[in-house]
View 1 (cartoon, rainbow, N blue to C red):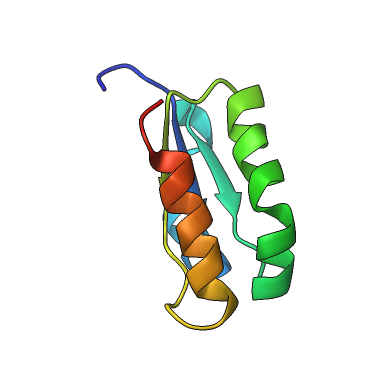
View 2 (tube, rainbow, N blue to C red):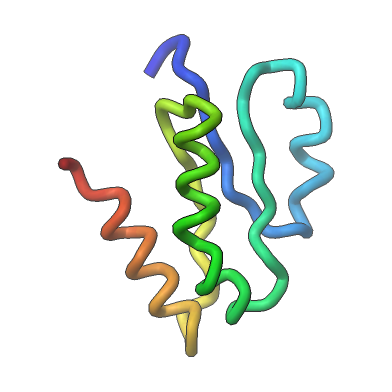
Length: 82
């Protein structure tokens, strides 16, 4: 999408890669370090992108084990076309 506002949901380890994106109008939110916290806040994070007017959201998937499987499933369902 050309000209759209992009939201990125990234692990804390990648925060430095987005330090210079603040002036671009794009939104970068950090994934909580704990999978349990990530699971509890996933929908709040997605709503924050909505509040900030993001047209597209890019999210890194968590590890494919334990709670990471459930979180990845939630992200895939949220990504489905409505």
